[in-house]
Length: 198
Image (cartoon, rainbow, N blue to C red; front, side, top):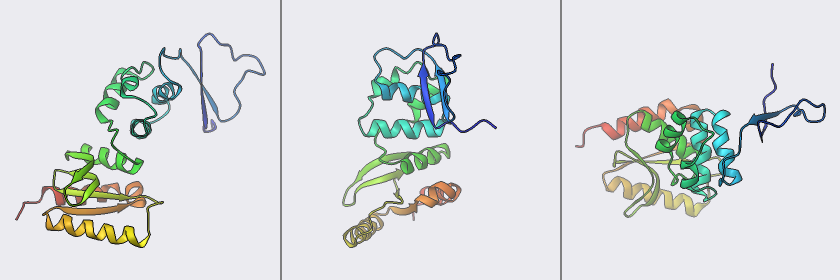
């Protein structure tokens, strides 16, 4: 079985790896391509990542870089190592507002289920929320390193009350929910978003 590659290196096509000292070590995968002109190293890495990552993971990585300002949208638009189909899908699915992989994964899953979903939306009286689905369901995603101090706990409850009083539903999910129970999230959010307004 081929070992899992932990490091990926970009090499020019003309470069030889036939010599004993030039072969990559275990856990290193070589990619032969010309580095695109004008792209920064991270943009090139994200472009090349389309050959190594599944589509969803590619969006997660590119979302994170875009949100942190480490790559510009114009650089992503200029990708040349990514296939045309993957490039179109990536540009369609990107959202630089997403502040965590959990948000990106959940947004993609909810959109794939046919739900209108927006990231980091400001809701009056509540503040910014992770996801707003169909304009009426707030989805909050609490990661493994989520804040747990008393002030944050109290503020979350205040936000939840204001949300309920404003005729919106708030659903909170954990890291484990996103990674292990996405079907449950889709079912619950769909039910809350599509049920008739009384």
